[in-house]
Image 1 (cartoon, rainbow, N blue to C red):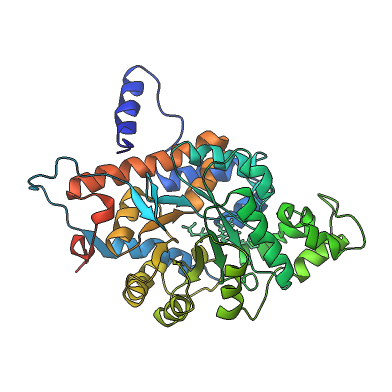
Image 2: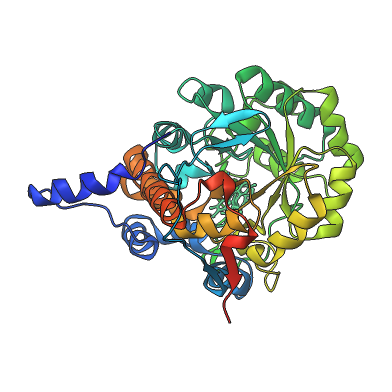
Length: 388
Ligand SMILES: Cc1cc2nc3c(=O)[nH]c(=O)nc-3n(C[C@H](O)[C@H](O)[C@H](O)COP(=O)(O)O)c2cc1C
Ligand SMILES: O=C(O)C(=O)c1ccccc1
């Protein structure tokens, strides 16, 4: 059993020896530190969401509407607090993964390499974005536990190439994001005129791809602004009529588990499970796509109920602390993806910042689970209620 909770003892011991912590433990404080470091364009890109940002706010607020029910008396539970989970038959030491986040070069020059080092040091797998700043093969050289997130391109042969490359390079699962057939309406980015792709950022997986390159007349030039390659990337970014038929074709390309990310409705979850999908990530993309969309946490119970034990249900959007992770798991999530918090850790202190953020969340997960008298894998609806 991993001892993430010990981090707390170390922090107090170091402070008693005069070494005060240099990074905040609270999400909002860390975000404010990142705001001081990042340029306004990239900061707005990460922090911003769609429209009036009501969904982004609702994602966080939803956690305040649930109350955990700790148990003080729990005979025989002295080893409670195990954080391990089993996903698709594999054992993971913690219930966390890092959510896929594109264009990390805006945030830190070491981008995905720093992310992978920081997260994998804790046994936390990273989900690498299709729109990464470093190609998956290059990240695979430093990462030992990663999944691949696919934005399904307009060109099915490119989709096939991405999935085959990810499988060959060592991904452990494929996550198809279906909530981003195009980017949402994002006023913070609009008012700053900030769209990193126009500068060729977030294109490493495309520019190195043989199928993508075969569609171009000129060699793609990294960093090129509004080049043929940039325009081809924008034009072929997504299939805007994706169906379960497309997604089912992934089976011809890989034996890895396939998840769909971006589901907030029981009917869609059922359709996906009927089509043989192995997992669903309940998520509204951190509120970045549809303003006024349902808070992801409020959609979780209906999806969990519809899916039953036919697929694994994972969760993201609005997770800011270890207690949030415990609430999502009590509502039925098998694992939880952390998004913006680690991005701010990366901005402030590279790999060490990512590790700090995830370590802090995991310590709180473990402490909270023990105080609930549970292992995280045993959390259930009995452990949580709506607040009156
Ligand atoms: C800057 C940024 C970039 C993102 N890029 C991607 C991406 O490339 N692929 C994807 O599936 N989701 C992407 N997401 C969504 C995250 O995977 C995740 O769903 C979201 O961050 C969860 O919300 P939270 O960060 O508020 O908790 C991105 C999110 C942010 C903040
Ligand atoms: O910004 C995003 O939310 C996002 O998902 C994305 C989409 C395309 C490329 C990079 C990130």
